[in-house]
Length: 391
Image 1 (spheres, helix red, strand yellow):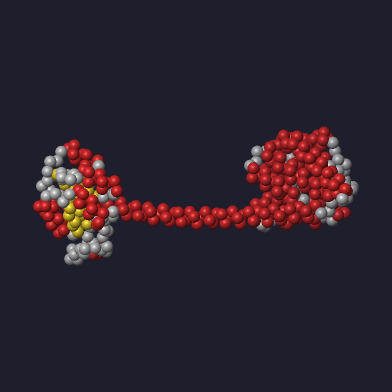
Image 2 (cartoon, helix red, strand yellow):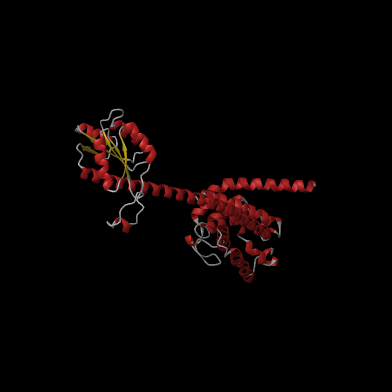
């Protein structure tokens, strides 16, 4: 049940020479069992540009409400078949925004309060002050129009929000799908590079597996987030990717490197940075950092840039520790494998000089799990080799 909103332009509304058309008028239902009163109110309100509908009882009024959907109702309280209070309650139950003005010959404070609490817009004594009735109708109708316009605007906004939310949800689903594909592609690229760096011998591949798993354990003990732990596991095998450009006679030399050879060897950090840099993707950014900084020292005496302290990215500081540990505890072409005790002693000698003390502490905390992982990997490789020989 909605009233008829005015269709005139602002200029029309302010021009007194332009009469209101029937479509412009707000409909007022006048309800009174006294014909003379009903006609008096109707004639007056029709001259005020209202379209008038009459009813002689509450039951008839309900029929008129269903038929015409008035903007406002003016009703007597005392009527034979259904009094105005019951009519008010029925109207409010279906259209709480309806403007209902009550009239009566025997007003009282209690009755007035009861009517207003029930939803009446105003309560007027009979004989009705016509000017006051008009002003009450005008204000009430204006408030109703504002409320209805606000409701329509709210509904429009809600629909717009639902449409945009649905579109955003669809876009996010698509973005997740694309990100999943990109992540898979990036991880595949990293794995390809890892295999490239390990192609020269099986020992390099095993070393990269250990670096990946050890780095994750140390990162977790250091308190890094789960995302960072996963990131360093994915990126750390790239730490020596630059060695693919270093000649075999240097990489596989059994004796000490000459100064010139060592300078060539040091370039693998910069070469790795160039291979991995420039993509702007998190896993490549992390891999580039590690390749560039895993030979930097906490005291600034490392290479290639002589970074010190917290200027060295934390991923680089972690890989610096686990890379040295793995080199100490495994055979290399230039040295035998050292015992766990001797390796730990050498690691402690690097505290505060070569290694970040906090990272070294995290490594020591993770060491029991690192030794377990080492044993598991050794068993897996032994089993794989045995199965390969069986074939």
